[in-house]
Amino acid sequence: MHLSPQTLNFGGGISSNVIDLLSLFPRMERLCFCVKFLTADRNYMERLPSFFNHLKILKLKFLDFSDMEQIFCSLCLIRSCPNLKELAISSDTLSSDSAVDLIVKCMTVQYSICCTLRNLSTVKIKARTGFKGELELVKFLLANSPSLVNLTFKVSGIRNDKDVLLSISQQLLRFQRASPTAEIIFSCEG
Picture 1: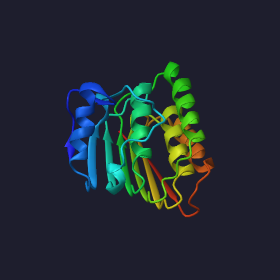
Picture 2: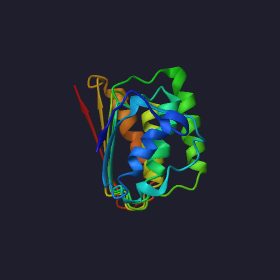
Picture 3: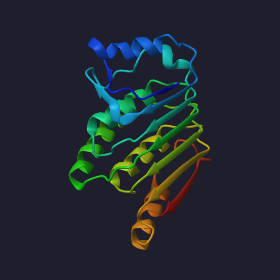
């Protein structure tokens, strides 16, 4: 199922129509969201209803790493899929320096929540940059995915900056992993 309505709002009111719609497909195994339309009016720490228990493949497109609400909604959605096997995230936005501290704070809050993505085996992240916000998401996923086989992290737009590329690759190698066999594949395009 691919959803990209004008606004998807997790919570009550008109927005609950999206939750109601998704509840009609309790055995849904694949879902693609255009994240830029996500908003939330409920507690970010809650999990969504249990009908995501069968979801195995989740694709989140156009995630804006400078938008806290999108980050929180995306993490809420990921945490609400206990049987998730594949996760793909794409971002075309540049993280601003002012947003990085908020993103790190958001991810730190998420670390404190008991969250194990025990079935997640494949992660693909395509980001416009490889700055701290994107790397914090990678760190979170590596730390909470004991069955992870590979994580692909692809950045674009910084091919000529060898110092930045080296720094990103060094940080990726230092992150703790819940899966001792997880492979990190880092690449740069255009």
